[in-house]
Image (tube, rainbow, N blue to C red; front, side):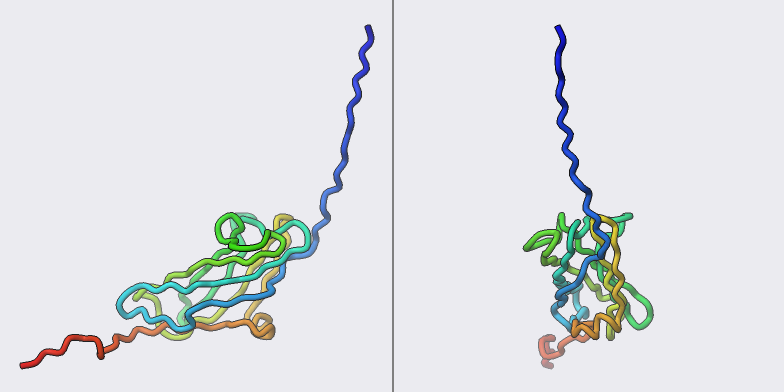
Length: 158
């Protein structure tokens, strides 16, 4: 008895994603942190879009991120991964939130955005540096202060 086996082959074209992701919004708050008594968090929010493959969780162990630098070269990197920081939308058009923590040991003064690095699932990368980010009207600096408010210190009466 002859048997006829039919195999159906479904060919799905791979996406030819050649465009890197885009930033459509970026903000952080507060813009001034006082680390005199304790560590302080800054909440970073970024809106990312990608045309086909979507924002990557990690590419070559480096997810999408922002980097700020103090005047003496201290760094703070804040990453944005769909698995943990995507709070609304999708990997094609989503809003990501993450925090960066500054301690009393971090340098006081202005911290300036060095770059925004974006990467999608297909491996397309975009590096955006200070001038480009600033030209888009996005914030580029936060301030770290280390001041104790003496109005709340105990007063010794003799």
